[in-house]
Amino acid sequence: MARIPKRSHNGGPPLDEYKGPPWGKGDPYIFLAWQAAHAKAWKAPSREVLLLRMDRAERLGLTYEEYTLEILERGRHLGHEDAERISAIKAARKRRRVRRLD
Image 1 (cartoon, one colour):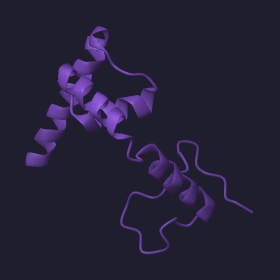
Image 2: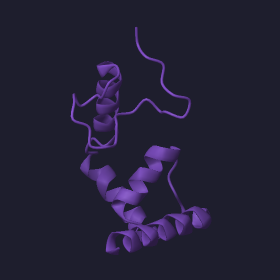
Image 3: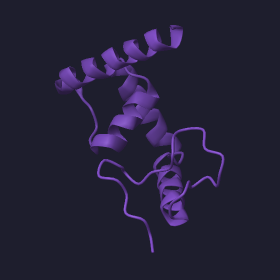
Image 4: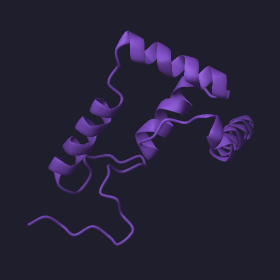
């Protein structure tokens, strides 16, 4: 019988330094499903799609990874009308840089 996850748990793999099987103490199927979904989401797109995303990201002032992550998370392509969201992404980028320096 599979264990019931805690209320705030998303069912993903553990994030800490765990000394056991890679799927943790739970069901290996959940780990394998997450692993497959991650590989599918970050599968290399065709050359044309890659160049299109790089061009759009550059015009918006984002990196390719930030632009692609936004597509994967929200399911929509950013444009100039999304200035508020773009500024939030850039602000998060600055916070990540500061944390790395500490």
